[in-house]
Length: 216
Image 1: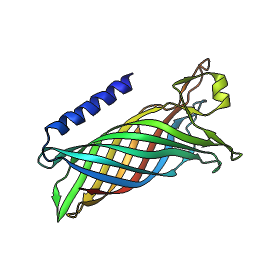
Image 2: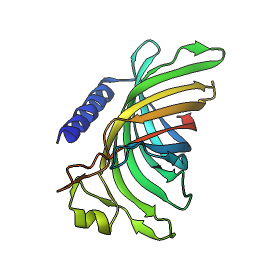
Image 3: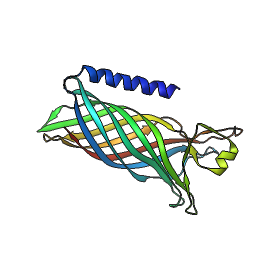
Image 4: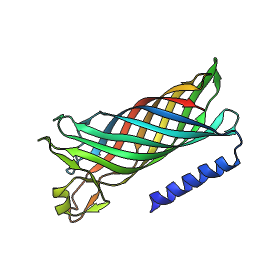
């Protein structure tokens, strides 16, 4: 409920700005993700995963709020997950619809503009696969709370993810741009398991990537 309230507040804020802005521009962006899942396993040990390559593609708007400062809401389709360090066959792929709201500083630099940004994101899981050590694929299921029986029969995660973005890039005078971005998940995406009070599992999405974009 708190996550939904936050999403509503962020979305309302973005649309309120957009309704007042006269110089809003729109853009498209696509890139490569290098994702991981960090945190704790059920016994409290640190996770032992490694990066998995994914991608993102989407649209955004830039709303000027002061000289060289902008609010940039967007909508992305993005893939996240991780691979096991012990066995490359074990991997988790998660597909999300993600809504970032970044706050940008874009001062002039040469013929273009430097891009510095920070802001929150909220993401909705829409699908995915878990592959076990035998190569068997399981369709990912989304629930906040599960039973021990469910935990043994399928692979579950929470649907909602929330975290922060940090980005650095450059926009050419032609409106083409390139940027580096880092992302840190701030919520545990592992579901709570009923009657498993000793479970210490905490999984959080983390990653970085590179992308290119164009403003219209």
